[in-house]
Image (cartoon, one colour):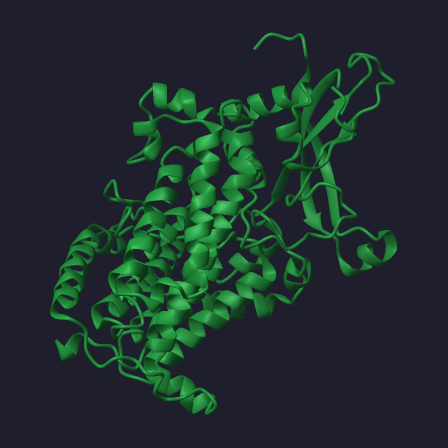
Length: 478
């Protein structure tokens, strides 16, 4: 089947497979470092309790084999090891089914984690990584040409990601329609980065250009991915540049990075050679593949296309769903982000004391988180593509309620000075000792102006403090 051979996309295949594998490494390392404290045997929302209730969202190895922290570590270590072989290009040297087998294993292992991850794994980039891993495995090894149908499916995945996000914005918030959303976004996004303040302080006319450019990139450019070269490569370059701006101005785990990797599905070897003559125009891709491989790929491609039909209908639905899966395998999903923009930033601040909480002279000390704003003099840091799950969930509390089960469990762990929980934080003011009481405040935060920054050295200004949860001690019930 010569028509199935994408002979001009060898570099794209290498970027796609190795890039997605690198992000699987990030995902498994993030899980290894945080899952046990959040969801382990003694975590905030124990997976063992979830499985006893039969509450897993879909297929998971832990339902069959039971959960333990040791098994979780084994899953993560195996995942990192398998993904590392792809990053090094080892399975790609073998028969065409070998990379597919490795990526199917990564997909199954990580899906086992996501489906018991509860609220801490309820993000769109989890299912995006799963779908990407399943799909890029079908690109095969270096012994066969990259299949055209798979490259089109990956471009279709980018289309769903970008166009879905664009449509949810237009439907979700007037600020996107009147081009004022970026007046707020850099300041109120879940986890600002080192350059977020500078981006926020840019003039209003620039923010309107940003919003208009976002609409063009998400609502028009994705259609161009399916046009002949070099138009498709230009469209991919626009998406990549837009995602790099988001990388520079925020922390969205691996969402932007995986979009960059997947956009390479539309970049041809010929286009790269024209821009960089040092890169050979012919990278030595075999002209044809065995018939059995072409049949397998074609069948899988048709299956993935059929699985994404509900997502296609969702794009044009008045009640468009954001980040939704329509089957238990999390393939053919609907994507989207920031359908609405918060106008003010509210941060939850947790304090503890060793004194009598009722005493007027009690001294209270703040717990510092790694990524979320707290100390107004601390510059926001860059963490993405690493995902700080606790910090992200803290951002959602003011939008929902501080009275969530996991958050009360978190306060209990602070009262007990639980070492695993404290390792999730940047600073424990009690150096591992138990506080007598903890309490919870909310504050409005905004970026300091240039004049305020010069005068005080602070990156943030916070005010309007409000007590959300009064002092809770170790002996208090509930």
